[in-house]
Image (cartoon, rainbow, N blue to C red; front, side, top):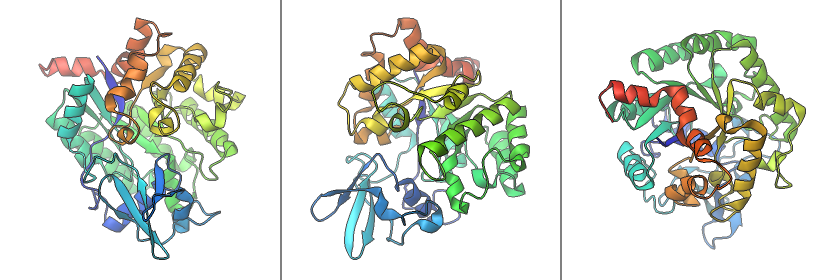
Length: 372
């Protein structure tokens, strides 16, 4: 069974998509584009620009987002205007004529790429995803496992804890997507291992829900910030021992693999080696615009990860449909499935599905429902 750890379904992004307003959704989307791996272009001549146009230098919070009439375009583009000049981020594939991805789109992708099951991640830029992820999971239980998502930076408050309870008990979502970038909304006023969040983490720990943590280097987006966040993550893992964690996107290449081989500081290695942490293998979404398929640079890094941590700690993900701005969905799995010849068949089975199956019991659940 091949299981993708990182897929998305979502409603049309021009709407609020579950957020209280379209404006809040737009701000989530704009923040996500301030440091994109996606390409940014000036509309009139196609000149490539950078995401730094979208925020004020030195302010990485929502308060630093510029007023640029940020909006949802067509053909996978997110548009904005500065001093009368139009720009866009090519965030989704060019062939996505409207930015919307219903479950049936993912089902067609999965059939063509020969992927059996997908974990549906979340994130504020996609919307407030609990109801839509639950809809997809309930419609197609053999194909989707949905993650829940709450306001991470306010997870100590009663409304957020109530939404957590609803997402798990009423909607039946089976894991947590947790993003550190959301702390920018309130100017990084709390750290994610703050003791005020212990009621939240204790609840997740009691339910034994896996947590998929996406950990950009907040608040300063530098190497020092990343290392501090890994130390904080280890603190949580040590204190809440029933939680299995997946590090979404895996280790950052730009921080630790500039030489083409991983070089981790001791603090990061201590976190990565923790028994309750797995690492996501997902290179095309961030490096597919730099490296060419079948990504020999990525293959070398996967080999190094296997040697350092073992195949039992590695989990493949794609970030479909976003990844198709750089390669096809089939290519996003085949660079591992067909081209990582240094992996044994057993190691490939673990990375491409068995590790996730052990975490979510996907095969057991589908059989219990008489599916497959």
